[in-house]
Length: 561
Image 1 (cartoon, rainbow, N blue to C red):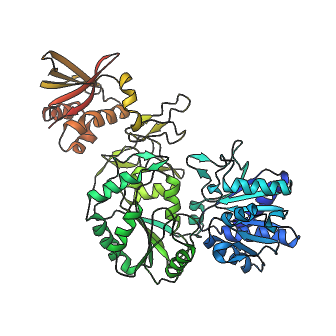
Image 2 (cartoon, rainbow, N blue to C red; image 1 turned 90 degrees about the vertical axis):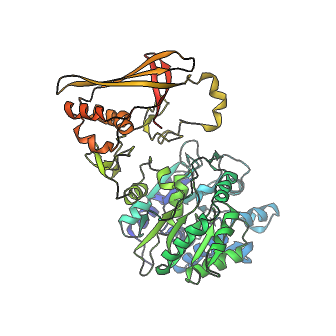
Image 3 (cartoon, helix red, strand yellow; image 1 turned 45 degrees about the vertical axis):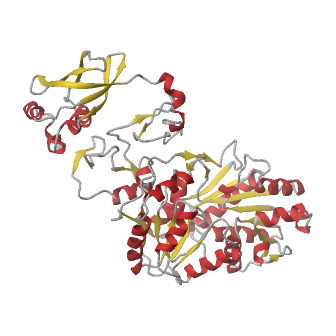
């Protein structure tokens, strides 16, 4: 078969890097980029030189896919995989699962004595390189001792574990080549576009669920599911109606129990569940049925995020939240492969993941945000940086500058890391650049001692005044209050909307909170007379939550009900 231009370039880059020294090399290639053919082509070069190649893949499904791709280019592989009932090791190129191989090494199987010239690892982000006794590291260590000049080439479309890169001085892989991203493949026409739509049915609210070990706690998620007894059924009726004109949908559920609830909400014999404990034969049978469009739905929690090649998938339904952008993009990637008659892949997000990732500058998320904006809202706030109009509730501009998301924030929190200081969304728990923690809900109790004191006071009267000239004026706000001890106190705030940035602050901190139909005033905040008229109609808060700082008492919250 004829390789694509980017594949040829990636293969050459791989060989150039492997020739330099014996440091492990990572080839980054996103879903749909043809990793199986890249592996096959690289292995074939070694085979022709009578060199030995071990191709490690994480599942029997991938062993079958990758070995079939090798056969497509006239290769003759061996398969060493217990679940496929095949443990052949006579050919130069062997495709194996790490589970089958580590068992063979323990039993001193003849495959343990082979001197491999290169080990190629698919889904290389699965390697826990910080654990010296992890299965991949034990295999690599064994064969490196058998042949000190052995090379290692990893492949993945997501070169991270958690929030950490798997490439670098302190990581397993020292060099990265290829850089074949999902967006590049979409732009070049090798993948279909994801089409994001706002579901009509209510979404699950997982906002109060806690994150543990990098993702949401299953018990918290199940509590949310249980609190909305009919919501899963209602969501899947909407999905089922949508799927009448589509082929195959992956449904990502929150827990195992949720998977079975989803199965019961779908038409009989239309869906299969694939979980971690699903045996290889059942898993392969389910994927084959989906590949041949004999079933409509594949249901899982985590097991269909990588290593799944079902081009018929043209819809992804998220009924689970994730804190991992990489996992989210991986899930979407399952539906982006080309297939006859397929124009796009529909993404239905019933777990508010898009809003969870709105602070990240990722091309797919940028498109998702623009596609799912409520078109009924008025676009009234113009970004001073890129001049794009945003809705009155925008926190970060939706504009695109030089193919990247505009980084202007209307409301933000700065990273507490003094060496970073980047702006983040007001709901962010970690900095989007350096991952420094901004909010840790699990440490609230331990921080009580150093929390600033807050006081809630009752507002008895307000006075809003405007002073200054027509072109340079100031808004003064005076709140007469009574504290919890019955003491009268005065709280002041002021705004000087003389510049564009100052008007945004005035609008966000005062107008939106105090005025009905706030957006109708936005275009006139530079006009002293219009502002004065607005103040005559402004609502007064009933209570204030205040906190002392170096300038006196600062208003933390205004309560109007």
